Image (cartoon, rainbow, N blue to C red; front, side, top):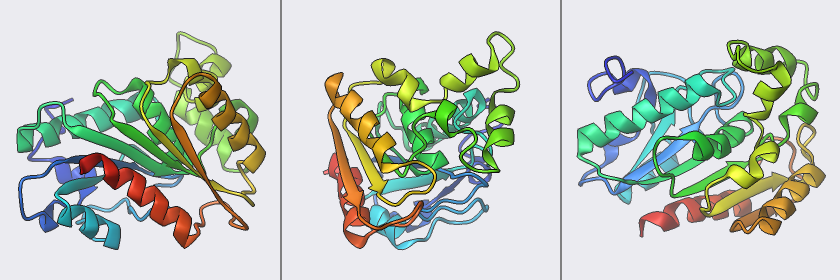
Length: 244
């Protein structure tokens, strides 16, 4: 994989804020795409600099913000994990990182992606932040007309297990006891029409019952992919706190 994804080709696989960093970087925040390739957190699936206000704030603090192009239908499948790991490898090569601080973040499919990447990455993830994430893939598969074909596409190449078993590998609810013991943050849109507040509550309760450190912020009256200023600010504070 590193033959194709390396420090010289990185711009084709991740949109980053490196242009705005003035000193040696401290570590990496990885942002993952929502369904279709865009992100409710700011990332865009284009070969260009990541220049949002948060990207520039990260740069001011010496943090690389990388929006990783794992694919618009990936749901953090095996290929998505491999691509993200290769992007981290390339950044480690470029900046001589050795076990860097890595925070995974994302919204919607990207929120699921951040959680599942924290589980399956070959790198040690420091913390995970997920906004309005898909939590139970089996329950959610028919929640939206675009979901069935995209979920099945994500695992169609998994020939050693049934489709249901394969889908469960992408499902945070079905992998609670396998998750790394790191800090987690969940931003819940209380009027989410795709992934309900009740479903997120069950997930948070089960995570806590299994001994995980997980913070959940409720954003009252917000539909899927929309944030209160307080909720978004707390999410960013959580992510930046690991680089102090």
